Length: 428
Ligand SMILES: *Cc1c(COP(=O)(O)O)cnc(C)c1O
Image (cartoon, protein in one colour):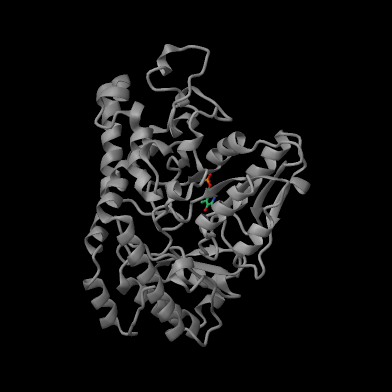
């Protein structure tokens, strides 16, 4: 494990910025003067390169019409595959195992429709009680479609403290009646990383398929999905990957499953050379491409081309290293400056278990967030009591982190939050 030693001064923050190997990437992003963005784990910021590749695709449409599918600068017909190839290093997979398609929730539906094969007494799905609601809704509806009662067939591993999951508890729940396991890579509130390698081994030892929701880890931490033999995974591309609001999502399917018929088929899952034969017999691609359904949202794919170039240049290992250091630094400052104000750090301290954000708990969290916004800091609130702060490796500076903690201190000292109500806004 790395060890860190920090000092609380502004000069020290500036020294860390000078030593930051990723510093130059900051200038590639549209940062708003006078505002400090700490919400890149909900919606990543626009980069100039993402803007450029989006405008190029728009221009190809303008100039080429239908021929943009094959003759544009970023031929749309192959774009989902090309982006899958660019994304593969971020999840530790081979290029054919990744495809950029659908949305997170749609991809989960697709993968459950494929990998959930209830048989005999093995009919249940295992998830956890801290997971993102959309995943639970999808699993419940998939069970209903197959004629099972979600109340008895969706098993949710309990958390002992409301923040974290114990791998031992998850493994203990891998019973004979479980057909499929869906877990997050990183918990969206507490930022805990689950031990994906261990959980995959334990699931496979019991003959259970396992898939991960990687929304909170893609672009923030490295993965080795192929090496760990994870069966499948899915994620969104608008958080750490900066693909833009509603950006087309991603999925990974381990190559040992190539050739399976996807649960939800559509013509974009065809072998590319067969797609326009217009036959009524579906010939699925022999790659993760088979899991596509219909025509991709090209203009919501295009920003990813530029964005993923940045990730390739920066390197996910370097991104992870800065992310660990800058989150450690934020926690250090919180403990140094805010100890009298009733905050609790609700994320793992250990580098090996901590994702990309700091989860700050406080009874007045909703209105402290409003006060932060009034002071030019964009945080993220998760009910009932969490302020998520995500310093992003590619564009957040150490000086900004230092300022955020100073602003928080002022808000707490002057009780500035008292002028707001302690309720969340429509989009939190
Ligand atoms: C952001 C997020 C989602 C969002 O799903 P969409 O289909 O993209 O709206 C799902 N799961 C997790 C864990 C998330 O963090």
